[in-house]
Image (tube, rainbow, N blue to C red; front, side, top):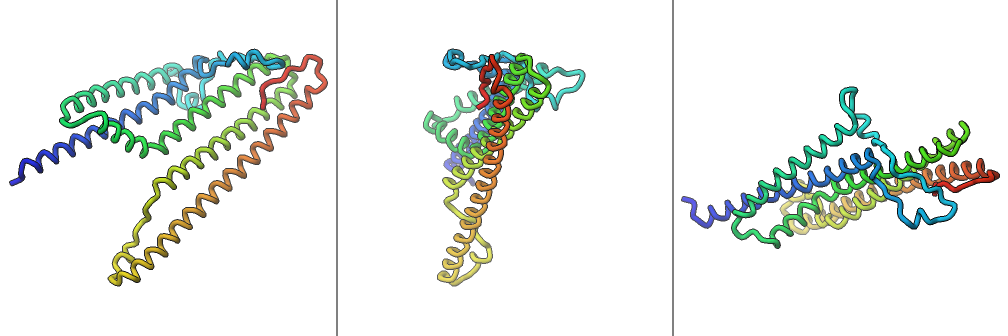
Length: 281
């Protein structure tokens, strides 16, 4: 017959597991809500606010940031019967509803959880956030790309108000594409570096080989395990280095292409009497 202490331990383990799952869900929903809020702010024209320092700069075209611009992620998911605003509002409200529901469930759980305190809660949160690192960085990456697309659209609209020629508009379109490539490659490189740093911190062990573990001779088994560990670590290092090298080369090419387009743009306006500098760099 199972004793009382074993029953208590099982209950505590079940409560901890349930609480952890609820915290995990709240973290996921909160991150998704941040992403959809960025979509919503972009559509409302409230994603970016210019600083007073920018507005006070001389030879600086203060282009409007109050533009309604829906990211391509939203445009690709609407049909004739649904507007972008309806889609975004629905997802934000649904995420908020689910988050409130889980928060209520979490409150009920911890209020009846004997021994649960702020220290236990923080330990659970730290562990969950650590394991959500890659997902969190992916969401942050998407939000930054939404911001860059918004900035580019604001610059394009201001440029079109400058009575530009068709050739100038063509150059500007090419410039925006190159800037998009530049910002994307820089963010991808940063994202990759953060992932590698994160994995290096966590990677304190190595995968075991069933064949090596089955060797009875302890000395031979330990030698093979050391060799196996070195091979695994070297393979990971080579892969990380190759990935970084490829990402850095892509960023370098994107920067060069963007700078060439900027120089081309400046050369077109070089002799203009009322030339004002658009913030292209």
